Length: 450
Ligand code: C2E
Ligand code: CA
Ligand code: CA
Image (cartoon, rainbow, N blue to C red):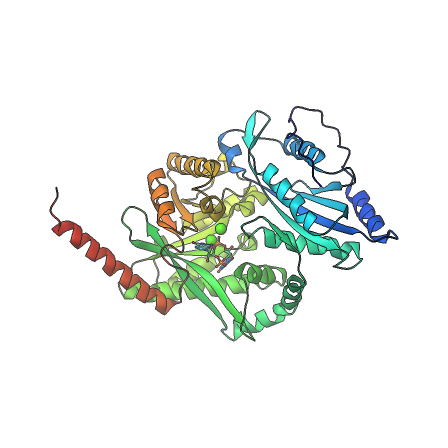
């Protein structure tokens, strides 16, 4: 169903391609296909293009227009005559593939598009890498409502963002999931009050010494009926329902309370707490953080706040003011999910941050992808130039650890060492880990050097 034409050249003209429609036209096209007397399988695909924008910071800036131009040419070459698509936003493309012989064809189409878009290309004379993922909703299985189909494809694309293959076909269970979430806002409010939430801790390891030097606080919630809610979803619900400030305050205080306990037990670790985007807008945040540190008696230098890139960029000047005020407290600041957002070198220079946290997206395939390895290397080198600590998240095996050490990364976090643990499990883990290190170093000191 998809042609095998060569990828388009980025130098061709910039007019809309023969498959491209406006947003409204595409929705009408979908309605038309659905309403046709003879029902044939049609797929709605929502493709989100995550750009590995980090390269822009280092190498140069590529305009959205050039990237769109490239994707337009590529789709024009890949799509069948009957297929149509529209840009829903700079990073979101919706495709409608009508008259399919069967629904499996929509998966083939997605795989083909993904594999072409994964190849790095040159735009505005600079290399660009895209990280696309695709959600698929199939007609007629999912009903005749165009709006619903688009929504299902959108939900599927969010699921696709977190899976290995980069695409996901919407299943009725996915809807059950989304429906289950709909009542959760009320339950979340109750859960915060009823102490049903827990903060778990994932060790962060110094790559040179192997010592656990800090930990990241990660929220865990098992909702009534033993439903384990995905933390990212939980944060999302909290943000949408206005509970995020209360929740973050609770997480911060819980994390500092446990850290204080650990410090008293001679478990000398720092604590990283995720700061959701909206919190930076709260003018009282510095006082809140200071109070929490005072209450639990944790030195400011032990606390790191992790902030996502997007947040910093949204409102540059006021973010800068807030970050500077936080920094004045003596705490550390880390840019989370580094590499997935839009910040550039200019931001890094001006922001009072101490750490870059390289996103799992780049770590996961570091062994198989030369691009990912180069990108991680570039981030680490860049960080060194700015005197920033680098931490890699999602380190699952020794090979990745060794490679990161060779690249000069400072810290690692991931399943290779441990998942996030409850406070009591963390204490046990820490002791065993420290003991094992001690034994290794004893071994090394008694082994005669050759
Ligand atoms: P994040 O801040 O990037 O957190 C890292 C996520 O990667 C965690 O997922 C962690 O469990 C997971 N992870 C760590 N090591 C590995 C590994 O080796 N392999 C794999 N596959 N995954 C690993 P988690 O706990 O599900 O959290 C997901 C996201 O939810 C977090 O991403 C963060 O954005 C948000 N979140 C979690 N807890 C909190 C919180 O307390 N406050 C806020 N504001 N956000 C939170
Ligand atoms: Ca984080
Ligand atoms: Ca991440």
